[in-house]
Image (tube, rainbow, N blue to C red; front, side):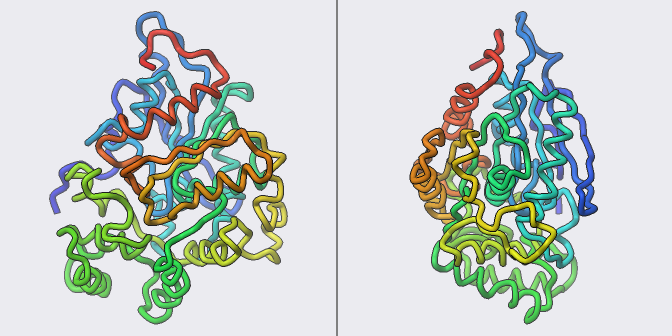
Length: 383
């Protein structure tokens, strides 16, 4: 295939020093952070921003969803609006790493306990202990980061923006059925180690390509096979992850590059949470490896004072009204520092990957960051 936009390109961010920082987890994985720093590019007498931001992707995506060159992306938006030190984490669910290309038994407890603490420690080693550190997280990256924060696996950060799902995962009825049957069906009936939205591009004739053809046979909403696979893998709808009209055409066409494969055990953990009453719970309370984490991630909810902005599209067909419910549950615990923003006309993924997100979705996020920043706003920057 001929790509219109290079795979893993950094061309979406200009006028920034870009560095890659590798680190290891306590359970033996190598992960990475991309740092975009514009301190030496500050003009008009401005000073570097005193606050940093870490951005976290969801399952099967990566830092690439925040640096897309076809529209004004989140990293560039933050850099342009006074946050001159932005870090993008690629944790174990990232398609920039190969960990989902084999069957595994990791859960979000693994991510919460092993991935975020060393990532935060690495950033702190560069910016110091006093500098403001905000987190913007999406999808199951949002869920797992809040598990790490509210499970006391990491020290409190300055603020968190959690998109699509927080500590109360809720999914449409059709998705509930998929969560129950998909792991066994994929692993033991079909004999596949993972699901891959790019199977239609397999050379030759493979089981994956056949599976993708069967999926596309029931999807007539567009002519992009990768989009059909994504709707089968996540959510309920045609399409499930976004509204087509919110995406640039090239974004829709390159879905196979922006989303990667996933092994099936994460499905099992989401299913366990849904069946526990739409509540973030530990997957296996008897597993001694996770003894430091609470069985129920609401256990310390009234002790964690970090403000959280819960955001979601009004037409979310993946996690439905999860964040609306999470906001209500926070209020029931008396945690009134948390806020909620719902974007009309948006779904799950298009809140970050739509072509007009800089106008429609990012401003409330920026307002929240500025409200909670430790440093004064940077003179000479937009915002």
